Length: 394
Image 1 (cartoon, helix red, strand yellow):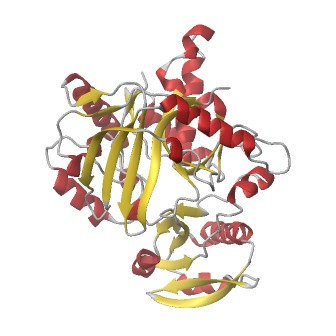
Image 2 (cartoon, rainbow, N blue to C red):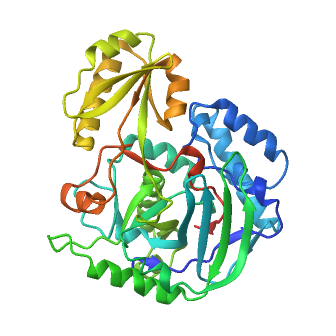
Image 3 (cartoon, rainbow, N blue to C red):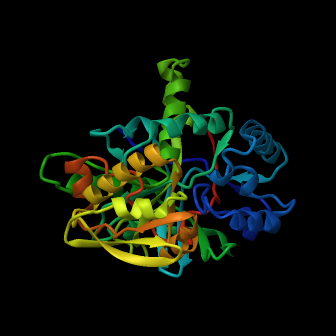
């Protein structure tokens, strides 16, 4: 199966890029001030903020927000906001406090992707997919004429064989991102076909000991990609086999990043339990193991034991959180960054988790299946993929 596609990428024709690009919708979900400041920065200028649904507002008049998003997409398309590139890829060089991370914006065939546990697909989720999170996201996507990706795929290339073959063309954008997001530079890749073959060769030459092939693992945006897959499955029911072959909704725009990129750091995703019974939570949480984690109440950190097998420790913690909320009420949020979890710990209890190593990452996915949901994050919140490129899906 040809799992990679050269897309027809859309970019703004003439926009202030510093307000066009905004951070991923699933970031800063407990920080109203962040998104209020973004709103103030954007004002009436063309921006991807008008084309996405920040998850902090998921309970805020969702039907009207979705209608507005779809209307804005149509308006941008008909009003000349976008220009379409020749079929191809974009090389993205993203500079943050961690260094310069290099990715390739491409399209994947959703027929080659599966988010189900135990899948042997060429493109797989890395974490457990919460099925109830998909229907609300389907409502956002199902009538949208375009998609904007914050999905980041990982590939396993210790020798940097793929990027070494890239032939750079025109610089498409080069600007500072808002809200401390660093800098983004996008360059057209002139030899997309050669890069596709490099990805396939890399996949074929990597041995995980059980004969399985794994092209990409979803590093960020798993639920967004699962939503794209669900929408495609719904759409293709009404299409002939021939119509399915090149339907734009079959192909999802993503950024592929080498797991060994020196500026790519695996950060833990911490747990924030919003409760007025913080001390009861702490007293009942007694993990075992030779590793370390921390609980935080009102900014004060206390070290606790934690399993060396980090994924297993997270499974146990999540089970405890679920049972605690069932018995005592409250809710859980997932926070990127130790400073952030400490600042929000006045809402209840924060649990600061250890990071998972990336040397064994692909082997864990191939041999052990999905990791627990929200096990890791690739960098801090301000390092997440900003929305820049778009693609038609209708």
